[in-house]
Length: 450
Image (tube, rainbow, N blue to C red; front, side, top):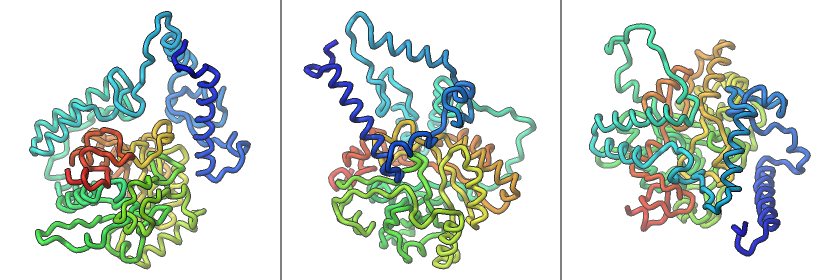
Protein backbone atom coordinates (compact mmCIF):
# COMPACT_ATOMS: atom_id res chain seq x y z
CA UNK A 1 0.00 0.00 0.00
CA UNK A 2 2.95 2.32 -0.42
CA UNK A 3 3.54 2.60 3.30
CA UNK A 4 7.30 2.12 2.90
CA UNK A 5 7.94 5.05 0.54
CA UNK A 6 10.29 4.02 -2.27
CA UNK A 7 10.93 0.60 -0.71
CA UNK A 8 9.09 -2.28 -2.35
CA UNK A 9 7.19 -4.82 -0.31
CA UNK A 10 9.81 -7.42 -1.25
CA UNK A 11 12.66 -5.18 -0.07
CA UNK A 12 10.83 -4.45 3.20
CA UNK A 13 10.34 -8.18 3.74
CA UNK A 14 14.03 -8.88 3.06
CA UNK A 15 15.04 -6.14 5.51
CA UNK A 16 12.85 -7.79 8.13
CA UNK A 17 14.38 -11.19 7.36
CA UNK A 18 17.89 -9.76 7.65
CA UNK A 19 17.17 -8.21 11.04
CA UNK A 20 15.65 -11.44 12.37
CA UNK A 21 18.68 -13.41 11.18
CA UNK A 22 21.06 -10.90 12.76
CA UNK A 23 19.28 -11.21 16.10
CA UNK A 24 19.34 -15.00 15.88
CA UNK A 25 23.05 -14.99 15.01
CA UNK A 26 23.75 -12.82 18.04
CA UNK A 27 21.97 -15.23 20.37
CA UNK A 28 23.70 -18.24 18.78
CA UNK A 29 27.09 -16.57 19.24
CA UNK A 30 26.40 -15.69 22.87
CA UNK A 31 25.37 -19.25 23.65
CA UNK A 32 28.36 -20.75 21.88
CA UNK A 33 26.28 -22.44 19.16
CA UNK A 34 28.09 -22.70 15.81
CA UNK A 35 25.45 -24.01 13.39
CA UNK A 36 21.71 -23.53 13.08
CA UNK A 37 21.10 -27.29 13.26
CA UNK A 38 22.41 -27.24 16.83
CA UNK A 39 19.87 -24.54 17.72
CA UNK A 40 16.88 -26.33 16.19
CA UNK A 41 15.23 -28.62 18.67
CA UNK A 42 17.38 -27.26 21.46
CA UNK A 43 14.38 -26.17 23.53
CA UNK A 44 15.98 -22.84 24.41
CA UNK A 45 12.60 -21.55 25.54
CA UNK A 46 9.41 -22.45 27.35
CA UNK A 47 5.83 -21.36 26.80
CA UNK A 48 4.10 -18.76 28.93
CA UNK A 49 0.38 -18.17 28.47
CA UNK A 50 -0.24 -20.98 25.95
CA UNK A 51 -2.50 -23.91 26.79
CA UNK A 52 -0.83 -27.21 27.57
CA UNK A 53 -2.92 -28.97 24.91
CA UNK A 54 -1.75 -26.57 22.20
CA UNK A 55 1.89 -26.85 23.31
CA UNK A 56 1.72 -30.65 23.45
CA UNK A 57 0.35 -30.79 19.90
CA UNK A 58 2.53 -28.20 18.16
CA UNK A 59 5.59 -27.88 20.42
CA UNK A 60 6.10 -31.36 21.91
CA UNK A 61 8.64 -31.35 24.70
CA UNK A 62 8.22 -27.66 25.51
CA UNK A 63 7.12 -26.78 29.04
CA UNK A 64 3.99 -24.71 29.70
CA UNK A 65 3.81 -24.47 33.46
CA UNK A 66 0.65 -22.40 33.93
CA UNK A 67 -1.21 -23.10 30.66
CA UNK A 68 -3.12 -20.31 28.86
CA UNK A 69 -4.95 -19.59 25.60
CA UNK A 70 -5.49 -22.13 22.83
CA UNK A 71 -5.99 -21.95 19.08
CA UNK A 72 -9.25 -20.00 19.42
CA UNK A 73 -7.56 -17.28 21.44
CA UNK A 74 -4.66 -17.04 18.99
CA UNK A 75 -7.09 -16.85 16.07
CA UNK A 76 -8.91 -13.94 17.72
CA UNK A 77 -5.68 -12.01 18.23
CA UNK A 78 -4.47 -12.62 14.67
CA UNK A 79 -7.85 -11.62 13.24
CA UNK A 80 -7.67 -8.31 15.09
CA UNK A 81 -4.18 -7.64 13.72
CA UNK A 82 -5.24 -8.64 10.20
CA UNK A 83 -8.22 -6.29 10.23
CA UNK A 84 -6.02 -3.40 11.33
CA UNK A 85 -3.43 -4.14 8.63
CA UNK A 86 -5.91 -4.56 5.76
CA UNK A 87 -8.51 -1.97 6.63
CA UNK A 88 -10.19 -0.43 3.57
CA UNK A 89 -9.21 3.05 4.69
CA UNK A 90 -5.55 3.86 5.12
CA UNK A 91 -4.79 4.35 8.77
CA UNK A 92 -1.72 4.66 10.92
CA UNK A 93 -0.53 1.32 12.21
CA UNK A 94 -0.57 1.41 16.03
CA UNK A 95 2.95 1.66 17.45
CA UNK A 96 2.04 -0.80 20.16
CA UNK A 97 4.15 0.60 22.97
CA UNK A 98 6.23 -2.56 23.36
CA UNK A 99 9.35 -0.79 24.56
CA UNK A 100 8.11 2.62 25.62
CA UNK A 101 4.79 3.60 27.12
CA UNK A 102 2.35 4.80 24.43
CA UNK A 103 -1.23 5.96 24.69
CA UNK A 104 -3.59 3.03 23.97
CA UNK A 105 -0.52 0.79 23.74
CA UNK A 106 0.67 -2.17 25.77
CA UNK A 107 0.31 -1.93 29.54
CA UNK A 108 3.56 -1.25 31.40
CA UNK A 109 4.46 -1.92 35.03
CA UNK A 110 5.05 1.75 35.76
CA UNK A 111 2.57 4.34 34.51
CA UNK A 112 3.29 8.09 34.95
CA UNK A 113 0.66 8.34 37.70
CA UNK A 114 2.33 5.55 39.68
CA UNK A 115 5.76 7.15 39.34
CA UNK A 116 4.43 10.50 40.55
CA UNK A 117 2.66 8.96 43.56
CA UNK A 118 5.64 6.87 44.65
CA UNK A 119 8.08 9.76 44.37
CA UNK A 120 5.71 12.11 46.16
CA UNK A 121 5.21 9.60 48.98
CA UNK A 122 8.92 8.94 49.48
CA UNK A 123 9.97 12.58 49.14
CA UNK A 124 7.49 13.78 51.76
CA UNK A 125 7.45 10.62 53.85
CA UNK A 126 3.68 10.49 53.39
CA UNK A 127 2.29 7.01 54.11
CA UNK A 128 -1.21 8.02 53.02
CA UNK A 129 0.10 8.88 49.55
CA UNK A 130 1.98 5.59 49.46
CA UNK A 131 -1.26 3.73 50.20
CA UNK A 132 -2.87 5.59 47.31
CA UNK A 133 0.00 4.37 45.11
CA UNK A 134 -0.32 0.83 46.45
CA UNK A 135 -4.09 0.74 45.92
CA UNK A 136 -3.71 2.05 42.37
CA UNK A 137 -1.13 -0.65 41.60
CA UNK A 138 -3.61 -3.21 42.92
CA UNK A 139 -6.44 -1.85 40.78
CA UNK A 140 -4.31 -1.76 37.63
CA UNK A 141 -3.05 -5.28 38.29
CA UNK A 142 -6.61 -6.54 38.62
CA UNK A 143 -7.86 -4.68 35.54
CA UNK A 144 -4.87 -5.56 33.34
CA UNK A 145 -2.81 -8.41 34.81
CA UNK A 146 0.87 -8.33 33.84
CA UNK A 147 2.19 -11.16 36.04
CA UNK A 148 0.89 -14.44 37.51
CA UNK A 149 0.68 -12.88 40.98
CA UNK A 150 -1.88 -10.41 39.63
CA UNK A 151 -4.21 -13.41 39.24
CA UNK A 152 -3.60 -14.66 42.77
CA UNK A 153 -5.22 -13.72 46.05
CA UNK A 154 -5.36 -15.10 49.56
CA UNK A 155 -8.19 -16.08 51.85
CA UNK A 156 -7.55 -15.37 55.55
CA UNK A 157 -8.06 -18.53 57.60
CA UNK A 158 -7.68 -17.15 61.12
CA UNK A 159 -7.43 -13.96 63.13
CA UNK A 160 -4.29 -11.85 62.52
CA UNK A 161 -1.26 -12.60 64.69
CA UNK A 162 -0.73 -10.11 67.51
CA UNK A 163 1.77 -7.44 66.50
CA UNK A 164 4.01 -8.17 69.48
CA UNK A 165 4.40 -11.78 68.31
CA UNK A 166 5.93 -10.95 64.93
CA UNK A 167 9.40 -9.74 63.98
CA UNK A 168 10.32 -6.17 64.82
CA UNK A 169 10.60 -3.55 62.08
CA UNK A 170 14.39 -3.63 62.34
CA UNK A 171 14.45 -7.40 61.84
CA UNK A 172 12.07 -7.21 58.88
CA UNK A 173 14.26 -4.58 57.21
CA UNK A 174 17.17 -7.03 57.18
CA UNK A 175 15.21 -9.14 54.71
CA UNK A 176 15.27 -6.46 51.99
CA UNK A 177 17.92 -5.70 49.39
CA UNK A 178 18.28 -3.51 46.35
CA UNK A 179 19.30 -6.05 43.66
CA UNK A 180 22.51 -5.98 41.64
CA UNK A 181 22.52 -2.77 39.60
CA UNK A 182 26.08 -2.04 38.60
CA UNK A 183 28.25 1.02 38.93
CA UNK A 184 28.26 1.84 35.23
CA UNK A 185 24.67 1.02 34.45
CA UNK A 186 23.86 3.45 37.28
CA UNK A 187 25.60 6.76 37.83
CA UNK A 188 28.05 6.85 40.77
CA UNK A 189 25.65 9.16 42.60
CA UNK A 190 22.61 6.90 42.16
CA UNK A 191 24.61 3.80 43.06
CA UNK A 192 25.95 5.44 46.22
CA UNK A 193 22.52 6.79 47.18
CA UNK A 194 21.09 3.27 47.23
CA UNK A 195 24.03 2.03 49.32
CA UNK A 196 23.70 4.79 51.92
CA UNK A 197 19.91 4.46 52.11
CA UNK A 198 19.95 0.70 52.63
CA UNK A 199 22.76 0.88 55.18
CA UNK A 200 20.87 3.56 57.12
CA UNK A 201 17.81 1.36 57.60
CA UNK A 202 19.74 -1.85 58.27
CA UNK A 203 18.98 -3.45 54.90
CA UNK A 204 21.51 -4.34 52.20
CA UNK A 205 22.41 -3.19 48.70
CA UNK A 206 24.09 -5.29 46.00
CA UNK A 207 27.04 -3.76 44.17
CA UNK A 208 26.20 -5.28 40.80
CA UNK A 209 28.99 -6.54 38.57
CA UNK A 210 30.78 -3.22 38.08
CA UNK A 211 33.12 -3.20 41.06
CA UNK A 212 33.15 -0.64 43.86
CA UNK A 213 35.12 2.56 44.47
CA UNK A 214 37.62 1.82 47.31
CA UNK A 215 36.92 5.29 48.71
CA UNK A 216 33.51 3.97 49.77
CA UNK A 217 35.05 1.47 52.14
CA UNK A 218 35.53 4.28 54.67
CA UNK A 219 32.54 5.76 56.49
CA UNK A 220 31.67 9.39 55.87
CA UNK A 221 32.23 12.01 58.61
CA UNK A 222 28.47 12.07 59.28
CA UNK A 223 28.47 8.32 59.89
CA UNK A 224 26.96 7.28 56.55
CA UNK A 225 28.27 4.06 55.02
CA UNK A 226 28.45 4.30 51.18
CA UNK A 227 29.73 0.74 50.77
CA UNK A 228 27.59 -2.06 49.29
CA UNK A 229 26.93 -4.74 51.89
CA UNK A 230 26.69 -7.39 49.15
CA UNK A 231 29.39 -7.71 46.50
CA UNK A 232 28.54 -9.44 43.24
CA UNK A 233 30.73 -11.78 41.21
CA UNK A 234 29.56 -12.13 37.62
CA UNK A 235 30.97 -14.01 34.64
CA UNK A 236 33.05 -11.03 33.50
CA UNK A 237 34.66 -10.70 36.96
CA UNK A 238 34.72 -6.93 36.47
CA UNK A 239 36.20 -5.16 39.49
CA UNK A 240 36.62 -8.36 41.51
CA UNK A 241 39.68 -8.27 43.77
CA UNK A 242 40.57 -9.74 47.15
CA UNK A 243 40.01 -6.32 48.72
CA UNK A 244 36.60 -6.03 47.04
CA UNK A 245 35.52 -9.42 48.42
CA UNK A 246 36.66 -8.53 51.92
CA UNK A 247 34.62 -5.32 52.11
CA UNK A 248 31.22 -6.96 52.45
CA UNK A 249 28.94 -9.13 54.54
CA UNK A 250 27.76 -11.22 51.61
CA UNK A 251 29.00 -12.27 48.17
CA UNK A 252 26.51 -12.94 45.37
CA UNK A 253 27.55 -15.23 42.52
CA UNK A 254 25.48 -14.22 39.51
CA UNK A 255 25.08 -17.41 37.51
CA UNK A 256 22.43 -15.82 35.31
CA UNK A 257 20.24 -12.74 35.07
CA UNK A 258 16.47 -12.80 35.33
CA UNK A 259 15.88 -10.07 32.75
CA UNK A 260 17.91 -11.89 30.08
CA UNK A 261 18.64 -15.54 30.90
CA UNK A 262 21.53 -16.97 28.92
CA UNK A 263 23.15 -13.59 28.38
CA UNK A 264 25.63 -11.55 30.36
CA UNK A 265 25.38 -7.89 31.30
CA UNK A 266 26.08 -5.38 28.55
CA UNK A 267 27.50 -1.89 29.12
CA UNK A 268 27.87 0.29 25.98
CA UNK A 269 31.30 1.77 25.35
CA UNK A 270 30.11 5.37 25.66
CA UNK A 271 29.15 4.67 29.29
CA UNK A 272 32.63 3.31 30.08
CA UNK A 273 34.27 6.50 31.32
CA UNK A 274 37.79 6.65 32.75
CA UNK A 275 36.33 6.19 36.23
CA UNK A 276 34.12 3.25 35.26
CA UNK A 277 37.02 1.62 33.38
CA UNK A 278 39.23 1.99 36.44
CA UNK A 279 36.61 0.38 38.67
CA UNK A 280 36.22 -2.51 36.23
CA UNK A 281 39.93 -2.81 35.34
CA UNK A 282 39.15 -2.27 31.67
CA UNK A 283 39.67 0.29 28.88
CA UNK A 284 37.70 3.56 28.58
CA UNK A 285 35.31 3.70 25.65
CA UNK A 286 35.27 -0.05 25.07
CA UNK A 287 31.92 -1.81 25.53
CA UNK A 288 31.82 -4.49 28.20
CA UNK A 289 29.82 -7.68 27.72
CA UNK A 290 29.92 -10.39 30.35
CA UNK A 291 30.00 -13.85 28.74
CA UNK A 292 26.86 -15.95 29.26
CA UNK A 293 28.58 -18.66 31.34
CA UNK A 294 31.18 -18.51 34.08
CA UNK A 295 34.15 -20.15 32.40
CA UNK A 296 35.16 -21.82 35.64
CA UNK A 297 31.70 -23.21 36.48
CA UNK A 298 30.48 -26.17 34.44
CA UNK A 299 29.15 -28.33 37.27
CA UNK A 300 27.86 -28.16 40.83
CA UNK A 301 31.34 -29.27 41.92
CA UNK A 302 32.85 -26.23 40.18
CA UNK A 303 30.34 -23.99 41.94
CA UNK A 304 31.17 -25.60 45.27
CA UNK A 305 34.85 -24.86 44.63
CA UNK A 306 34.13 -21.18 43.96
CA UNK A 307 32.00 -20.92 47.11
CA UNK A 308 34.84 -22.54 49.08
CA UNK A 309 37.40 -20.14 47.59
CA UNK A 310 35.27 -17.11 48.44
CA UNK A 311 34.95 -18.24 52.04
CA UNK A 312 38.71 -18.70 52.21
CA UNK A 313 39.12 -15.05 51.23
CA UNK A 314 36.33 -13.80 53.49
CA UNK A 315 35.40 -16.43 56.11
CA UNK A 316 32.72 -14.21 57.66
CA UNK A 317 30.69 -13.58 54.52
CA UNK A 318 27.52 -15.29 53.41
CA UNK A 319 27.45 -16.63 49.82
CA UNK A 320 24.33 -16.31 47.68
CA UNK A 321 23.89 -17.84 44.22
CA UNK A 322 21.70 -15.95 41.76
CA UNK A 323 19.57 -18.11 39.47
CA UNK A 324 16.78 -17.19 37.08
CA UNK A 325 13.15 -18.19 37.21
CA UNK A 326 12.39 -21.09 34.89
CA UNK A 327 10.94 -24.56 34.92
CA UNK A 328 13.55 -27.04 36.10
CA UNK A 329 15.20 -24.61 38.51
CA UNK A 330 14.39 -26.95 41.40
CA UNK A 331 17.12 -29.45 40.51
CA UNK A 332 19.66 -26.64 40.16
CA UNK A 333 18.58 -25.12 43.48
CA UNK A 334 19.08 -28.48 45.19
CA UNK A 335 22.57 -28.66 43.72
CA UNK A 336 23.36 -25.14 44.91
CA UNK A 337 22.26 -26.09 48.42
CA UNK A 338 24.53 -29.15 48.32
CA UNK A 339 27.39 -26.90 47.14
CA UNK A 340 27.16 -25.21 50.56
CA UNK A 341 25.72 -21.89 49.46
CA UNK A 342 23.97 -19.91 52.19
CA UNK A 343 21.17 -18.50 50.04
CA UNK A 344 19.60 -18.76 46.59
CA UNK A 345 18.19 -15.80 44.66
CA UNK A 346 15.42 -16.62 42.18
CA UNK A 347 15.29 -13.66 39.81
CA UNK A 348 12.30 -12.74 37.67
CA UNK A 349 12.16 -11.25 34.18
CA UNK A 350 11.87 -7.56 35.09
CA UNK A 351 14.97 -5.37 34.74
CA UNK A 352 15.41 -1.66 35.15
CA UNK A 353 18.82 -0.18 34.27
CA UNK A 354 19.05 -0.54 30.50
CA UNK A 355 21.74 -3.23 30.59
CA UNK A 356 19.80 -5.48 28.21
CA UNK A 357 20.05 -5.21 24.41
CA UNK A 358 16.82 -4.38 22.60
CA UNK A 359 16.51 -7.96 21.34
CA UNK A 360 16.38 -9.25 24.91
CA UNK A 361 13.78 -6.94 26.45
CA UNK A 362 10.74 -8.81 25.21
CA UNK A 363 10.10 -12.55 25.43
CA UNK A 364 13.11 -13.17 27.66
CA UNK A 365 12.85 -14.45 31.22
CA UNK A 366 9.91 -15.62 33.31
CA UNK A 367 8.05 -14.18 36.32
CA UNK A 368 9.70 -15.00 39.64
CA UNK A 369 6.58 -16.84 40.85
CA UNK A 370 7.22 -19.81 38.55
CA UNK A 371 10.80 -20.45 39.61
CA UNK A 372 10.39 -19.49 43.26
CA UNK A 373 7.56 -21.93 43.96
CA UNK A 374 9.42 -24.79 42.27
CA UNK A 375 12.70 -24.09 44.07
CA UNK A 376 10.92 -23.96 47.43
CA UNK A 377 9.07 -27.23 46.83
CA UNK A 378 12.07 -29.19 45.53
CA UNK A 379 14.30 -28.02 48.37
CA UNK A 380 11.60 -29.02 50.85
CA UNK A 381 11.08 -32.46 49.30
CA UNK A 382 14.83 -33.11 49.46
CA UNK A 383 15.13 -32.00 53.10
CA UNK A 384 17.38 -29.12 52.07
CA UNK A 385 15.06 -26.20 52.76
CA UNK A 386 16.20 -25.73 56.34
CA UNK A 387 19.84 -25.16 55.42
CA UNK A 388 19.41 -22.40 52.85
CA UNK A 389 17.49 -19.14 52.51
CA UNK A 390 15.47 -18.12 49.47
CA UNK A 391 15.44 -14.61 48.06
CA UNK A 392 13.43 -13.35 45.13
CA UNK A 393 13.22 -10.24 42.97
CA UNK A 394 11.76 -9.08 39.69
CA UNK A 395 9.13 -6.35 39.53
CA UNK A 396 8.02 -6.14 43.16
CA UNK A 397 6.18 -2.87 43.68
CA UNK A 398 3.98 -3.18 46.76
CA UNK A 399 3.54 -5.04 50.02
CA UNK A 400 1.11 -7.37 48.26
CA UNK A 401 3.89 -8.56 45.95
CA UNK A 402 6.11 -9.18 48.97
CA UNK A 403 3.41 -11.20 50.74
CA UNK A 404 2.78 -13.39 47.68
CA UNK A 405 6.52 -13.99 47.26
CA UNK A 406 6.70 -14.98 50.94
CA UNK A 407 3.77 -17.37 50.53
CA UNK A 408 5.58 -18.98 47.60
CA UNK A 409 8.67 -19.54 49.74
CA UNK A 410 10.81 -16.39 49.77
CA UNK A 411 12.39 -15.16 53.00
CA UNK A 412 14.22 -12.18 51.52
CA UNK A 413 13.13 -9.73 48.85
CA UNK A 414 14.82 -7.56 46.25
CA UNK A 415 13.30 -4.24 45.19
CA UNK A 416 15.16 -2.75 42.23
CA UNK A 417 13.16 -0.62 39.81
CA UNK A 418 10.94 0.77 42.58
CA UNK A 419 14.05 1.90 44.47
CA UNK A 420 15.27 3.75 41.36
CA UNK A 421 11.88 5.41 40.94
CA UNK A 422 12.01 6.45 44.60
CA UNK A 423 15.32 8.29 44.06
CA UNK A 424 14.13 10.07 40.92
CA UNK A 425 13.89 7.72 37.93
CA UNK A 426 11.11 8.81 35.55
CA UNK A 427 11.13 5.65 33.41
CA UNK A 428 12.05 7.57 30.27
CA UNK A 429 13.46 4.22 29.05
CA UNK A 430 16.67 5.50 27.53
CA UNK A 431 19.05 4.16 30.20
CA UNK A 432 21.23 2.49 27.57
CA UNK A 433 21.78 5.72 25.62
CA UNK A 434 23.65 7.64 28.37
CA UNK A 435 21.04 10.40 28.21
CA UNK A 436 18.99 9.80 31.37
CA UNK A 437 17.46 13.25 32.03
CA UNK A 438 17.53 12.85 35.83
CA UNK A 439 21.04 11.47 36.16
CA UNK A 440 20.15 8.00 37.46
CA UNK A 441 21.40 5.72 34.66
CA UNK A 442 24.02 7.94 33.05
CA UNK A 443 27.74 8.70 33.15
CA UNK A 444 27.56 12.14 31.51
CA UNK A 445 28.78 14.56 34.21
CA UNK A 446 26.40 17.29 33.06
CA UNK A 447 23.36 15.05 33.52
CA UNK A 448 24.73 13.49 36.70
CA UNK A 449 24.80 16.95 38.28
CA UNK A 450 21.00 16.90 38.30
